[in-house]
Image 1 (tube, rainbow, N blue to C red):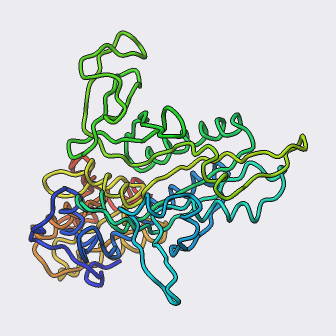
Image 2: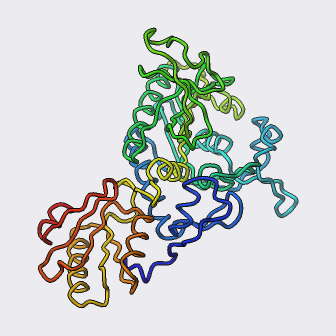
Image 3: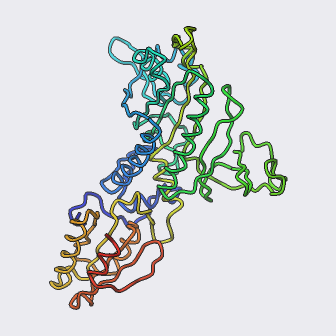
Length: 412
């Protein structure tokens, strides 16, 4: 991609209402554009990042036997009546009236749709367990939309639902999902901690994945042994002896929730009268689990963790482009020729590249490169006549002079 052709450019001015690093840097970098509070357009750079996160999520859900579907975002009122959630969710549902005065809601979650769907299509005990997921925009009438992609009214969500005949089978799948979630966040460059959360009416605990950062709005009480609880259910306070290892002391840190998993027991299957005959011939209630990750929220969290005063530092796994080529003087024929040669060879090798082909000064180009945060910057300057360029990893800032051949060996 040549920068001159890119739809959406960097913006030197800081958004007046940016209350977080991700809101500021993603808008300034031309990754997203705010339509209104809590609602954003993903520009080409931002959409590339979002898709990379979604693909990591997709691969790990497929690895635990999840099958991808896509359910409607427009839901009928009667499904929520069956679960007693039409009024209970009144504070977050976007409700509207369709033709024929039919009452509808925009999707904020998927239990009311997926449960009757699976009931209709899965009719034998031999087909269990079942796990289906979708990656879909969700809508919640968030009264305090803020912090860029971290708390929005429209956002990308992966929700997986599993269906089981026994508690033992559910427990085994729940443990598999824990491992899958850990892999997702590791691949996205996030150190996400497994945190006990309130299980509500379903169980004593559910689990959240929290990323420690000073910009977080959650509080996590934790010990180095791995024990962690969120503030809503915390049975300890800062400085207490850890109830798990007995030796450690409880610390408290701010964090961003990036995912959650929790048992649903038979709440929704009972509401839709979803039972079937088990292997023993007896009617069996179907047990459910729910597993959520917000790819857009993950994207915002990555920026909150991976940035400095100059801009974003994208992990290679989710970066919109791996390499950013910056010719110091695009009008210089020698520099332009070498830059185009490197661009072509990298693309041939399957490396995604952004070329800064603008007739701008090096200072502005370098500043934009730091703001955009591609993992590697290749500077083509005075050494171009000798076939020498500079390689600068965004994460370290350490500059290395290399021949084109050595550069390709490092990047390919």
